[in-house]
Length: 109
Image 1 (cartoon, rainbow, N blue to C red):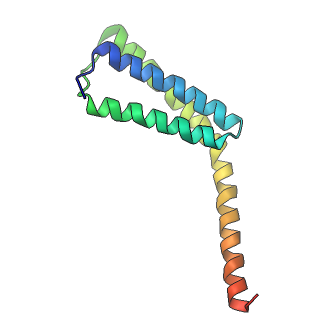
Image 2 (image 1 turned 90 degrees about the vertical axis):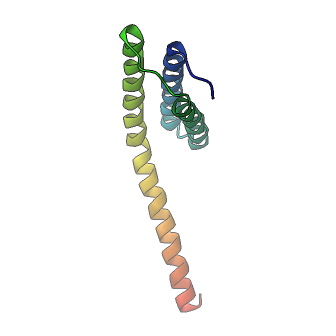
Image 3 (image 1 turned 90 degrees about the horizontal axis):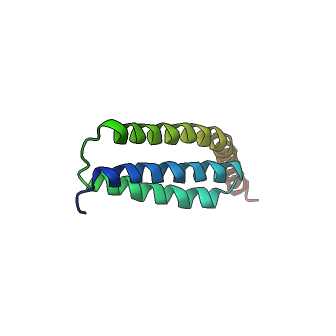
């Protein structure tokens, strides 16, 4: 991938912050499919940054990048607060189903 300019880097971080906000809305709406799709979009931008040999930013561009990262971290924390109980419930359901199957097999039910 070609070298990204400072503006490209800042734009990418700001785009990722917008996507992360959309991910938070999806998590609030229990729209797990949309959340997963948005996570994939965000991952593409992360890969783009990693592959582009990003240059150090200074001044206003650095401030914008840091602000975007802070927004992403805040949204990520809120997303985890929303998804952790759901994941625990899902894990319990899977565990119960697995246990039920083992009991059924053991007793020939």
